[in-house]
Image (cartoon, rainbow, N blue to C red; front, side, top):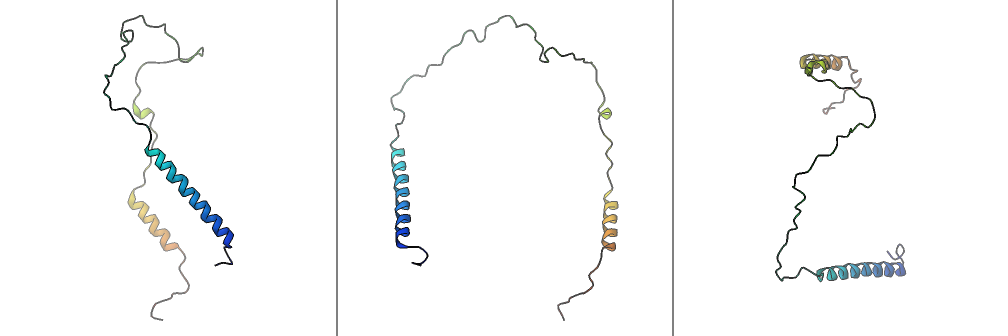
Length: 116
């Protein structure tokens, strides 16, 4: 094993591993000593906004579309006007087509059995 990893390289790797371990251990130790909230009680004061719920005039109407020309219509259209005709193939037809394709597939020329 000494041929693959020279002694100096092993010492360098061990030193780097120890340095990383020491760095993480120091970070964990300082993380536990972080300042926390004081335990002295204090009253919570909620700010009031009296202007928020008062009545006032509404703003002027503005268009979301900008200066573009657009048209609109009122009324309802039945959903059948928008639907596309979806043709579903019955499952029996699908099975018959699969079976027919399986019959027409090429078969193996040589059959190997366990008894031979």
